[in-house]
Image (tube, rainbow, N blue to C red):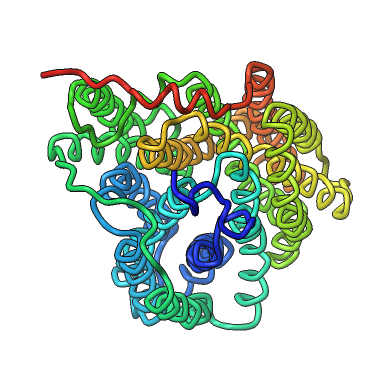
Length: 494
């Protein structure tokens, strides 16, 4: 290990000033990309009205975005080994900037969708690249603090996105959401061009085209099927949902078999041979399912049941986002000192408590109390997400960092889409069953139906978190000797 990697250069978390600059430039790029992703959610109704598209068509602005990311992330392990940090980051920011410009000036739906696809192509590369760089340059005992620094923006961006979007959409055109991001993205590109250096080693790995095809069909099918249900295009048992999920599942089975037989797999699934990694990954997946669905269900409840404006619904998320930004470096330092186990247990306990409270909300529930609950939810997430992810990757040998990052990022994306679809479907089915045989024109019946659907959806989310809570007691700290012992990951011979 060199001096920078050990973090002994100047005593800082990142080992040297040049490393710090690298990470800060990349963090700003990731922040802009994630912020832009969440800005669009509140603006969709305005966009549909302005360009004249139905919800069934407009949902592709979200579904298409998720699809591209779900398909692209499994490739990032190969891309990060093949290309330099600098070239990959500049390419990702270039794609994101081009997509943002296209979306801003798009006269109709087709070009707007193209802009979103280009944005997603850049976004899908940025976070795995940032994580891999951090694990390449930061010593194991300081990675909690480093990931905590990253977490300030990673967690803050999606939390403030709805609030900013509500303010902008209420007073300006939705195009301002894209125009306002372009100068920041161009500044990041210019700064990266001048200051960003290469910090990871490159090689010339072979890419297996058949694995790439199976990955695209597999993850793409799962995300598309889940998103179709989540966007209201059918129940979980409809053909348009089950068909792509079945194709995706079959392709993924073949993908896994092929990866385990290849000398140079697209994704090194032997990372799951490391116990801490294999235990931490499903815990993070469950939390992503609960978090994504809660972030979507709560604004629905506030606007449709309690008649709050988009801005008021967005403001509910703001204190939680601010607290996550404050807590992220604190939990990072706590992780470096105590490990992930008890942070995870306490965090999941908070998440479970707030989900139960959400399940039993009523039309008379106070706005401030809902804001408090959401703040506690975000506190719980901030306490466990980055520590558990850091602990999972710490358990891997350095040559598997790129693969581990790609695996976690992919499964988080897929689980977020599936969780949203599952809980939205639960909400819809529960509401419909409640209103069977009742007067559907009665606003009181409609409200009661929505409350019943929300209750059942949040209860399902609570059960998922309860399972993760029990599993978290099995976590232990990934120690340096475990990592060194794991260097010799066995590869099959042909």
